[in-house]
Each structure stands twice: as C-alpha cells, then as structure tokens.
Length: 327
Length: 243
Image (tube, rainbow over all chains, first blue to last red; front, side, top):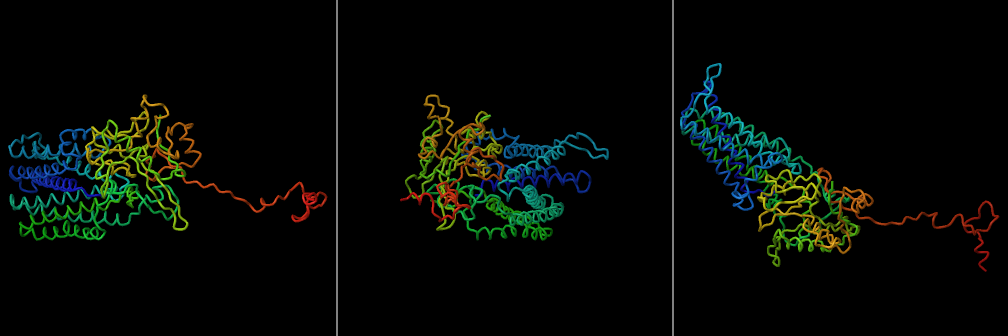
C-alpha cells in the first residue's frame, strides 16, 4: 500500500498521546494507594494538556486524509454514523470522546475541582479526576483497538490481518507515551522519572518483541490470491500484457509504495534500531541523565514514523495482480 | 430478491475496448458530473474509469494464447467495501443488489478501496470522491428509453455480445443459464465476497475421432455369406457393383 503521511502522523501522534495519558493515570493510581507520592495537580494537569496537544496534532493530520480538507466541516460528521460495521467510524467516535475525557481530566486537576465521589473500604478517596481517569483509560484502549482494527480487519491485507497488529499499536503507543512521560516528569517531577522510565523500558521491550514477531509472521506469509484465481485461468504461466491504461491509474498509485525493494530492506532494520534499540539504550542511560530521555522520545518518534511507513508499505494488496503492466 | 450482474464471455471478447469507451462516455455525461481525465493527450494520461479491458498472455510461446479480460466492479453479494465505509456513502441496494457510492456523502478517505480485493474503485482526482461502476443505474430504469436500450452502456456497446446483463437470482434468466450451462465462475473465490458478476471461460470445440470410426466395421454393403465377417480389405458389394 502507499503510505499516507496523514495517517502515519495521525497514528503515531495519538499513540503517544494515549500512552502519555495512560502513564499519568497509572502514576495517579499508584499514588492513590500510597505506592508513590501523589504529585501536584499541575503535574497531572499539564501532562494532560501535553497529551491533548498531541491528540490535536493527530486530528489535524487526519484532516489531510480526507479527499478535501473542507470535508472535515461539511461531511466528516457522517463518519460517526456507521459505527455498527466500520472500525473507522468507531475510531471517529473514540478519538473525540477520548480527547474530551483527557480535557476534563486535566481540567479537573488544574481547576482543583476534585470532589470526592466515594471512599473505598480501605479508606482511599475516589475523586472526580480518578473516575475520569478510569473512563479515559478505557477510552484510550478502545481507541487503540479501533485504530488498529481499521487495518487488522481487512482480511485481504494479510500482513495486517492479525491480532499482532492490535497488540503492537497498543505497545508502540504505550512505549512512546511512557518515554514522553519519563521526559516530562524529569523536568516536572524529577524524583518520579524513574517510575516512568522503568515502565517505558518494559513496554518498549514488549513492543520490540511484538513488532519483531509480526515481521517474522509477515515474512512467512504466502499469498492467497494468485494470477490464476484473479482471472480464473488454470495455467502456471500467466503474464499481463496490458492493464488497459496507457498511463498510470489510481490503481497503480494507491496500492504501491513507489520505493525500491532495497529501500524497503534498508528501512526495516533502521526502524527497529531507532524505534526500539536506541531508545532502550537511552532510557537506561536516561536513568542518570534526564536530557537523554528527551532525545529518546524524539528519536523513537522518528523511528515510529519509519515503522508506520513500513507497516503500510509492506502490505501487498491482491488488486496489484491486475495492475502489473502499463499498456 | 434481485441481483443484477454482468456475465462476461471471455470466449467471445476480442479486446476492442468498445465497452470501456462507451462506459466512459455514458458515465462522464450524466447528472453525477464528469469522470475526471487528467492530461488526456499528454505523455501520461490518467483518469477515472469504471471499466477496463486488460490483456493477459497465457502460456509460453509458441503454446500461448491471448486473453482479453474486461474488469469492472463485480457488485459482490457480500461486498467488503460497504461495511468499512464510515459515512454510509457506500451501500448495496436491497432491491437490485447494485453497489453504489453516494458522491454527496463520500469523504474521499479511500478506505473502501483498501477493502476491495479487485481494485474496482477509483477515486475521482478532481471531485475527490470515490467512484465506481453503477451498472448504469441511471439508464437501466430510464422509462424514456426504449426497453431494448435499458441495459448498461457497456453491454449495448459490445460488438461481439460478450457481455450479458440480467438477474443472476432468477434461475431462468439469460445470465443464470449462461453461468450454469457454460461454466461461469467468479473471481478470487478465496475471499468469500461472492461476486455477482461472472465470467465464462475460454472454450475450445474439439472433435475427437477414434480410429475405429474411420472405417465402417459393419458396412451392410459388404458381400454377404462370408462368415465370419470378411476382412476389411476383402471385396464388398460396392466393389462387385462398381463395374
């Protein structure tokens, strides 16, 4: 498939935002039970604002995935109508819902409006921000699942049609968000940076394993559709002589990444190193030098852009069987 | 329930592209607006077409043959492009099974093209909405046309009558009979999309003659009385009366 930069930025930005929110709320949950010192409202509030900023960036990128940007105003609202069947429609519901909850979560902290709604038998007060955090956590995972299922549900694109797609979107978003949280906390609450960096290392290792597993799986895939099933002729030797168009068509542009096989071979190890190996090394050193955490986030983000590009480029659409020879 | 469809006889198609030009002409002139064409007379012409004729070479020289293969939306009975559409712009009509796009609702996200294994949909690069074969829905029900003309324009244009049009759910229809009696098949059956359009395979008429059919063993004109039967080269009544 042809990687669309709008979608690459959308998925990586909101992935980081979801991960950051999950990191913040994980910390608040630990703190509620006294496992970590509770941080100031500003810590959680401004962290949520950062998450919201990334989500807004993702939404802005998504505008350019529409046929015309104006469709965002005139037609995109229809996109929420088909939630019964379309994962994209579900994503279009989950994204604004998650943004709303992140906003309310941050606002309840920054405004200090955290009325206690109930008290646990063990004595912990469950306030409004905590309830919003739980709802936001559920929505963050729902959004991960919706985003990934947009690709994983397409059974013809067998590189994507796997539970690993969903798992990896969650893990890579989580990794990106927790690294950002570690960097954020290194400046906002330095004594808590180790907590986030520790989780970031664990999630990044898992993400590395998940992505490697999907690469291994994809390398072993055998195409289900062949020239023979495409045109229904039983013969081992079938060559297309003409696709019926003298120039390129939508079908030659949309379904092929347009880069050489060598480029594809190069970007695979490149993204594995930049998105997983180097950030892990920087996280390990970052435990002693906070500035490295920022480098780790930016470097990994670039790696994840390459990862997402490769994710799209690697998927081989069966329609390509019909469009091999211009003539 | 009705399921309108095309049946394309690959045995008859000569690859003349008349269906392509006729389709383009009809569908670029309708109320839905033009189908875009960019750089039509330049080096790399490109544009939106609902129907294309492709050509394949089967086998290797000298034992090869050419297959002309018209390809358009197959109006699947279980269309994978429809449920993925977030806006409901893509839909399958209940009354006749035609898969259509509402150009006023489409946001041009191209997700449906990812979900179609056949590459049947093409975006209109000017209108920025997805377009596809409509089975000439604006023609086949047009009461102002003579009944004989209420067929998709590709079907009307085909000089060799390689394209049949009708209801494949009606067992007595021309298309159903053609599929049943001439080995009609669907493309990429492995995906379970149940395409409504079918293709009739290339068929060769061959006459198989066995050796014993070359000579008539029980020729009644053979000389009688020679039992057991005379040898094939023995004289016959034909020989006897040949004088």
